[in-house]
Image 1 (cartoon, rainbow, N blue to C red):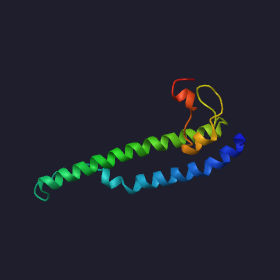
Image 2: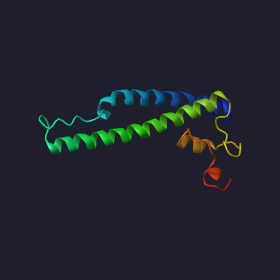
Image 3: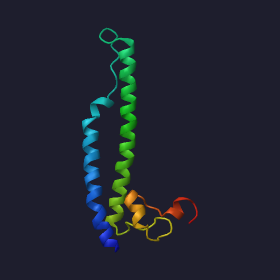
Image 4: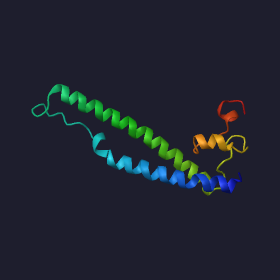
Length: 115
């Protein structure tokens, strides 16, 4: 596949995923808010559950944020004409690797330290 074809293949997929992740982030914002520690209205175990749920939601949001940044970096590489090329050695990244995750910026050899 030619570089333009590769970019044309992955660009809409990355945009769709970015839109989905941002929407999920907005939808789950409430679950990441600090837990109210009002002992009059909520029991100790309920507060602990709420704090655990808030911590898990925050961890999911952190992973979501990492993925958003990776997608934005891939889209930036597309805009610069560098998408599909290893950031370390400059060689083309195999299409099969990009199929696994189009945000990869390095070839297998460079990622594993063999490049």
